[in-house]
Amino acid sequence: MSTTSLADWLESSHGHYLMEREQDFIDQSVADIFGYNAVQIGLPQYDLLHASRIPLRVTAASDPAAKVKVDVDELPFESGSIDLVLLPHVLEFNAHPHQILREVERIMMPEGHVIITGFNPRSLWGIRRALSSRMEYPWCGHFISLPRIKDWLALMGLEVVAGRFACYAPPLTNPAWLKRLRFMEPAGDRWWAVCGGVYFLQAIKRVPGMRPIKPQWNESLVEKLLPVRPKPKLNRELSQRRNIRSQ
Image 1 (cartoon, rainbow, N blue to C red):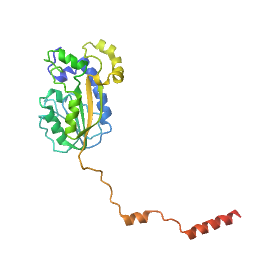
Image 2 (spheres, rainbow, N blue to C red):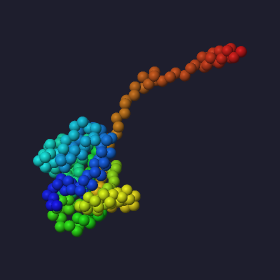
Image 3 (cartoon, one colour):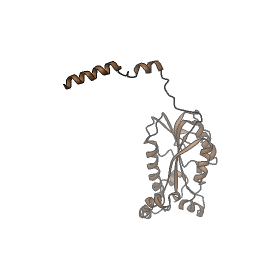
Image 4 (cartoon, one colour):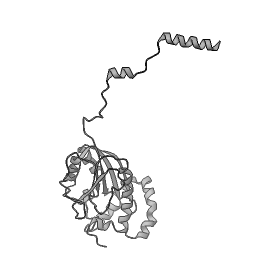
């Protein structure tokens, strides 16, 4: 089957296999991320942020199907305005992946989150790409290694806080064979974790010098609220009363 877009390929049997695992990771990751604004960049055909509790969620992409049509190299969002950014396989299909990350870092709020999914070149999927003609999706993409992505994130002050691999079965087109090879998923997590066909990363924007705001205590008020120790005289009276009752 000839595929002219990533969304087209994701409708295939191995595309469904990949999306099931990616959606599971994204659902688990976004469930505990709070804020006001979230942006999914790319794959507008899929509502990948449906499990997010953030009230305002927007899908932005160069694809006409997106709610917000944008140039991913220059995102039309204010600096420091987004709490969560999702990049599902955006970097490997763009000529300027480093510039995209710069834009993502710019629009993220301090302590904001970014979730990245990408194809792992050091896997059976990477071998499949090396052996293909690289004319169709997803094999026409430039698979970026995980260490390089981590280096880029570190240079931008984005700290990786979570990540994993998935899709250990080879990218076969036969659904029956994919079903038979599902045992490779738990086995891969245990025995060859870094060889999954895709990787997921979750990073937080750290801003140097920021610290939690603590309340300024009113010392005189605190002293009034603290319990007062009983006076020695009162203690003696209480002990005398106990003695009287015991007699």
